[in-house]
Length: 293
Image (cartoon, rainbow, N blue to C red; front, side, top):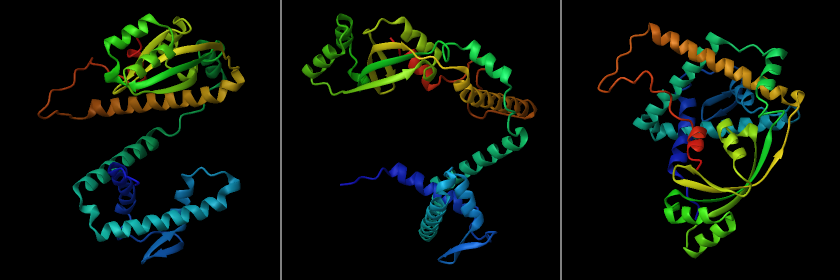
C-alpha cells in the first residue's frame, strides 16, 4: 500500500494556495492560453513558469507544453481548495503570510543591492592562491562507512572500534549483537568538505576508524585511500567566481540588515534579549566537525 506523507501533502497544498492568494478575484493580464472552470491561464503566467524551469533551448517547446499542463492542474487544485475553504485553515493562512513576507524581503534586497559585480581576474587568482587545499593541493578521500542509529553507538561498540582497524570486524560485531545498520562507500574531495574536517581527515592514518554524529544517526567511517586531485586555475575559475559573487552578495545583505536594525526600534517581549556575543548557531557542517572523534 502506498503511504502519503501528510506533511509533504500539506506543503504541496501551500504552494498551490500561495499562488492563488494574490490572483483570486483579480484579472490576470496577458493573452489567455486556457480557461479552467472560468479562470484564465495567461501567457504571462506561462512565461513566469518557464523562467523557473531552466530548460535548454532545444527543449523549450516540450517544456512549454509541460508547463501549461502543470498550470492547468494547479488551477484545478486551487478550485477544489477554494470549494473546501482550505484557504481559511489557520495553518494555511500562516504559511501564506510567511511566504509573502519572504518574497517581499527578497524582492526588497534584490532591488536595494542589485546583482553583485563579477569579480576581477586578480580577485579570482588571489583566492586560488590563498586556498591551495581547495585547488592546487586538493586531496580526494575515498571512504567506507557504516550508518546506524546514534543510540547504538555505545561504549562497548567504541571499545571494539579501538581494538580493531577493520570496518568488517565492526560489522561482524554488529551482526552478532543484532544491531541494524547500512554500509556505504563515498568519495569526497577536499573542496567539498569544511577545511576543519578536511584537515582532520588528512591527520588520520589510512584505515583508522572514526565516528561522525549527525543527530539521530551516526557514521562509523574509515579512510580507504587519500590521493592528490589538483585543479588548475582555468578549471576552477567559474566555481571561484560564483563563490565570490555569492560571498559579496551575502556580505552586502548582512550590512543592509545591520543598517536597518541600527535605525529601528526593536523590543523583545516576554523573552530575554539575545546576548550580543553569543555568536551564530553552528551550521550543519560545523556540527559534523564537532562530531568527529
